[in-house]
Length: 166
Image 1: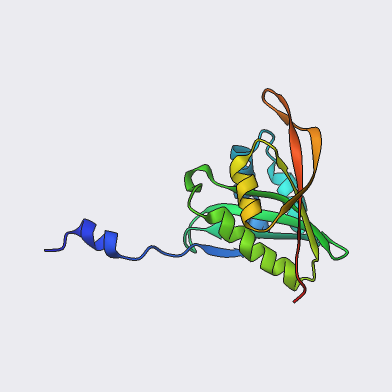
Image 2: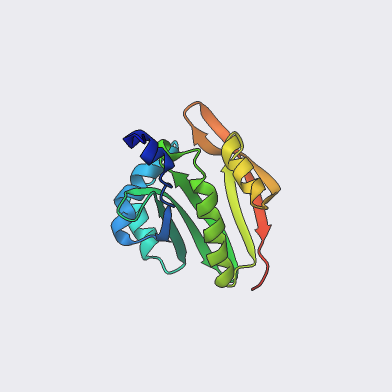
Protein backbone atom coordinates (compact mmCIF):
# COMPACT_ATOMS: atom_id res chain seq x y z
CA UNK A 1 0.00 0.00 0.00
CA UNK A 2 1.32 3.46 -0.94
CA UNK A 3 1.59 5.92 1.92
CA UNK A 4 1.24 9.67 1.57
CA UNK A 5 5.02 9.98 1.94
CA UNK A 6 5.55 7.47 -0.90
CA UNK A 7 3.15 9.43 -3.07
CA UNK A 8 4.96 12.76 -2.52
CA UNK A 9 8.37 11.13 -2.94
CA UNK A 10 7.18 9.81 -6.31
CA UNK A 11 5.50 13.05 -7.44
CA UNK A 12 7.86 15.04 -9.66
CA UNK A 13 9.08 18.30 -8.17
CA UNK A 14 7.93 21.45 -9.90
CA UNK A 15 10.51 23.12 -12.11
CA UNK A 16 11.68 26.53 -10.93
CA UNK A 17 10.13 29.46 -12.80
CA UNK A 18 12.20 32.29 -14.24
CA UNK A 19 11.01 35.70 -15.39
CA UNK A 20 12.14 39.26 -15.87
CA UNK A 21 12.43 41.08 -12.54
CA UNK A 22 9.78 43.71 -11.86
CA UNK A 23 9.70 46.80 -9.66
CA UNK A 24 7.50 44.89 -7.19
CA UNK A 25 10.44 42.47 -6.64
CA UNK A 26 12.79 45.17 -5.30
CA UNK A 27 12.17 44.46 -1.61
CA UNK A 28 12.82 40.72 -2.03
CA UNK A 29 15.94 41.40 -4.12
CA UNK A 30 17.31 43.68 -1.39
CA UNK A 31 16.64 41.04 1.29
CA UNK A 32 18.41 38.30 -0.69
CA UNK A 33 21.31 40.61 -1.56
CA UNK A 34 21.68 41.65 2.08
CA UNK A 35 21.83 37.99 3.14
CA UNK A 36 24.43 37.26 0.46
CA UNK A 37 26.98 40.08 0.60
CA UNK A 38 28.89 42.03 3.23
CA UNK A 39 27.25 45.26 2.06
CA UNK A 40 23.86 44.52 0.62
CA UNK A 41 22.08 46.98 -1.65
CA UNK A 42 18.92 48.54 -0.29
CA UNK A 43 15.43 48.66 -1.79
CA UNK A 44 15.96 52.13 -3.28
CA UNK A 45 19.12 50.99 -5.08
CA UNK A 46 17.22 48.06 -6.58
CA UNK A 47 14.31 50.29 -7.58
CA UNK A 48 16.72 52.63 -9.37
CA UNK A 49 18.38 49.73 -11.19
CA UNK A 50 15.08 48.14 -12.19
CA UNK A 51 13.94 51.50 -13.61
CA UNK A 52 17.15 51.83 -15.64
CA UNK A 53 16.63 50.80 -19.31
CA UNK A 54 20.24 49.56 -19.48
CA UNK A 55 19.62 46.94 -16.75
CA UNK A 56 18.52 43.42 -17.62
CA UNK A 57 17.26 41.56 -14.55
CA UNK A 58 15.83 38.08 -14.02
CA UNK A 59 14.38 36.32 -10.99
CA UNK A 60 13.82 32.66 -10.21
CA UNK A 61 11.11 31.18 -8.00
CA UNK A 62 10.50 27.61 -6.84
CA UNK A 63 7.01 27.88 -8.38
CA UNK A 64 5.01 30.77 -9.91
CA UNK A 65 3.42 31.94 -6.64
CA UNK A 66 6.55 31.52 -4.50
CA UNK A 67 8.74 34.37 -3.26
CA UNK A 68 11.82 35.31 -5.28
CA UNK A 69 14.47 32.66 -4.68
CA UNK A 70 17.30 34.31 -6.58
CA UNK A 71 18.13 36.94 -9.16
CA UNK A 72 20.72 38.25 -11.59
CA UNK A 73 21.24 41.83 -12.85
CA UNK A 74 23.40 43.01 -15.74
CA UNK A 75 24.06 46.40 -17.29
CA UNK A 76 24.09 46.40 -21.10
CA UNK A 77 25.91 49.22 -22.92
CA UNK A 78 27.12 49.42 -26.53
CA UNK A 79 27.11 45.69 -27.24
CA UNK A 80 28.85 44.75 -23.97
CA UNK A 81 27.42 43.73 -20.62
CA UNK A 82 28.56 43.38 -17.04
CA UNK A 83 26.90 41.11 -14.53
CA UNK A 84 26.44 43.43 -11.57
CA UNK A 85 25.22 40.81 -9.13
CA UNK A 86 23.76 37.35 -8.84
CA UNK A 87 22.40 35.99 -5.58
CA UNK A 88 20.30 33.10 -4.32
CA UNK A 89 18.41 32.98 -1.06
CA UNK A 90 20.47 31.11 1.57
CA UNK A 91 17.70 28.52 2.03
CA UNK A 92 17.79 27.62 -1.68
CA UNK A 93 21.55 27.50 -2.30
CA UNK A 94 23.07 24.32 -3.64
CA UNK A 95 20.01 23.42 -5.76
CA UNK A 96 21.25 24.74 -9.11
CA UNK A 97 19.25 27.97 -9.07
CA UNK A 98 22.29 30.17 -9.82
CA UNK A 99 23.28 28.02 -12.79
CA UNK A 100 19.76 28.10 -14.24
CA UNK A 101 19.55 31.86 -13.74
CA UNK A 102 22.92 32.46 -15.34
CA UNK A 103 22.25 30.22 -18.36
CA UNK A 104 18.91 31.84 -19.22
CA UNK A 105 20.23 35.33 -18.49
CA UNK A 106 23.13 34.78 -20.89
CA UNK A 107 20.68 33.64 -23.59
CA UNK A 108 18.76 36.91 -23.19
CA UNK A 109 22.00 38.89 -23.36
CA UNK A 110 22.90 37.09 -26.60
CA UNK A 111 19.45 37.96 -28.04
CA UNK A 112 20.17 41.58 -27.09
CA UNK A 113 23.34 41.47 -29.21
CA UNK A 114 25.88 41.39 -26.38
CA UNK A 115 29.36 40.17 -27.36
CA UNK A 116 31.70 40.39 -24.38
CA UNK A 117 30.19 39.75 -20.95
CA UNK A 118 32.19 40.80 -17.88
CA UNK A 119 31.91 40.32 -14.13
CA UNK A 120 33.91 40.68 -10.93
CA UNK A 121 33.76 38.18 -8.09
CA UNK A 122 35.39 38.05 -4.68
CA UNK A 123 38.51 35.88 -4.95
CA UNK A 124 37.52 33.77 -1.92
CA UNK A 125 34.02 33.01 -3.27
CA UNK A 126 34.80 29.48 -4.49
CA UNK A 127 31.19 28.48 -5.33
CA UNK A 128 30.78 31.57 -7.54
CA UNK A 129 34.16 31.09 -9.22
CA UNK A 130 33.27 27.46 -10.03
CA UNK A 131 29.84 28.50 -11.33
CA UNK A 132 31.32 31.08 -13.68
CA UNK A 133 34.06 28.74 -14.90
CA UNK A 134 31.45 26.02 -15.62
CA UNK A 135 29.59 28.58 -17.71
CA UNK A 136 32.62 29.48 -19.82
CA UNK A 137 33.98 32.58 -18.08
CA UNK A 138 37.75 33.05 -18.08
CA UNK A 139 39.87 35.03 -15.62
CA UNK A 140 41.23 38.22 -17.21
CA UNK A 141 42.60 40.08 -14.20
CA UNK A 142 42.59 40.79 -10.49
CA UNK A 143 41.94 43.91 -8.40
CA UNK A 144 43.81 43.86 -5.11
CA UNK A 145 41.79 44.81 -2.03
CA UNK A 146 38.71 45.71 -4.09
CA UNK A 147 36.00 44.41 -1.74
CA UNK A 148 35.52 45.46 1.86
CA UNK A 149 34.88 42.49 4.12
CA UNK A 150 34.19 41.96 7.82
CA UNK A 151 37.89 41.22 8.32
CA UNK A 152 39.38 43.86 5.98
CA UNK A 153 39.50 43.57 2.20
CA UNK A 154 39.43 40.89 -0.47
CA UNK A 155 40.62 40.81 -4.05
CA UNK A 156 38.25 40.85 -6.99
CA UNK A 157 38.74 38.37 -9.81
CA UNK A 158 37.76 39.89 -13.17
CA UNK A 159 36.23 37.45 -15.67
CA UNK A 160 34.96 37.57 -19.24
CA UNK A 161 32.92 35.40 -21.55
CA UNK A 162 32.65 36.13 -25.27
CA UNK A 163 29.08 35.46 -26.38
CA UNK A 164 28.57 34.19 -29.91
CA UNK A 165 26.28 36.18 -32.17
CA UNK A 166 22.85 34.71 -32.85
